[in-house]
Image (cartoon, rainbow, N blue to C red; front, side, top):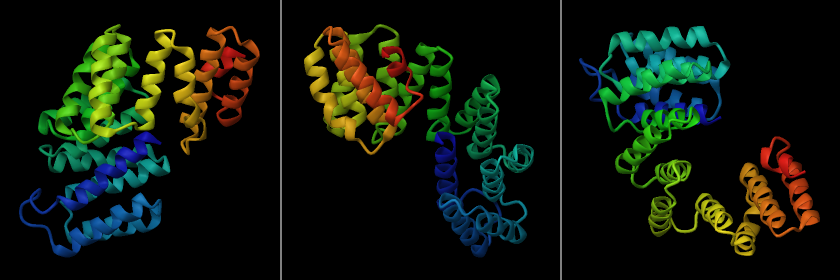
Amino acid sequence: MRLVMLALVVALSCALTLACSTVPPLPPKALELNRDGAAALAAGDLSTAEARFSVALEYSPRFTEAWVNLGYVELRRGNLQRARKHFIKARDLNPDLPAPHHALGLLADKRDIGKEAEGHYRQALKVDPGFVPARSNLARRLFQRGAFEESREQYLRLTQVEPDALAGYLGLAECLLRLDREGEADDVIGRARLRFGDAPELVMLVARQLLRRDAFAEAEEILAPLTDDPDRTRASAAWSWIGVARLARMDRDGARAAAREALAIDAENPIAAKLL
């Protein structure tokens, strides 16, 4: 899902920034069709999106962003070979745009070819260091393979290229915790709370820090409201961490009850499964 959402962000971004990306200027109707196609893609109407992007390409066969967006349609459908064909076409038309490189990274990510995905994300950033989706995905891939220091560097840069987004601060704090740099993590969390308030993701990080410091009752208190969070994954995580807090206080029955609540929301919750 995260890959899909990032793809839609890129598609919509491209639809709004095309006027200066291709020479000669694109026909206004092609721009309109690409923009409307991106809206259809975001809404999950893949047939309409495909039709609009295809007509846009009839108006301008060298319309790089329309080729990228048409590839996203095929990626959403699971047609990976067709998606790759469209992404490569876009890259060959204009390798100086970040979007085709990023799209190829998403495709490699989808196939779980991590090294290849990282390479494409880095190429997108070489073209445009401010291209946020590639920066975010590169940081995520590095974190997933345990390269926490490299991931930290990318998340730190993300806080600068997109300072009004919480994701960079969250990733940066997570990396610092994995690197046992808790003081620095506390500083990042504190600065993020000043900027974004008590966002649920930040409250979860604060609670985990309290658990590390044996402040179990306080951690449970601030986690309790998150058990009703509309985000089911977060609600399940809140219950599981409450279970950890209760177990640390030797409340085994309470810990099991919290674990059952977590698993009722998300049967794949690994912390809750371990608690039981």
